[in-house]
Length: 193
Image (cartoon, helix red, strand yellow):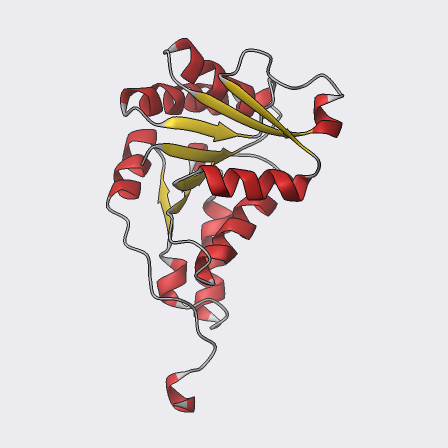
């Protein structure tokens, strides 16, 4: 893995633990010589992970829609800042640049980005690892929901386990390195064959 896309909040969250974990991830990325691809902001968890990578001498690519750059939240010290026209173009560019996708705590935008890339993996549009850095048990309710989806047969077991989860940057990156993608999604069941 040469580049990791990170989806996360533009807010700090309710506890310093989120910022500290983002910094820890940044240090681990540099240690492994993995470039960061992210939304390009200078604020919140996004800014913390980017600052950490930069402080450790790593490479950071920000991808930001022009309307957000106009609001002066773009990080001005990135290795590379790519300005795009829309949120859709941002996600597509990040997907093209990255070898894997990791969600840190964030709000609806973080989940929307993660779910789109997760869905693309299910459909076989990419075979890159997707994961959740479950800082402070933030994603426990989502993991429970994935399990419920699987129990209710709206999510195949092989896709439920496709989302890699760990509470530590080192652990999640180790899982990314050994990831084997499942077969491409089909809607035909064994009963229909």
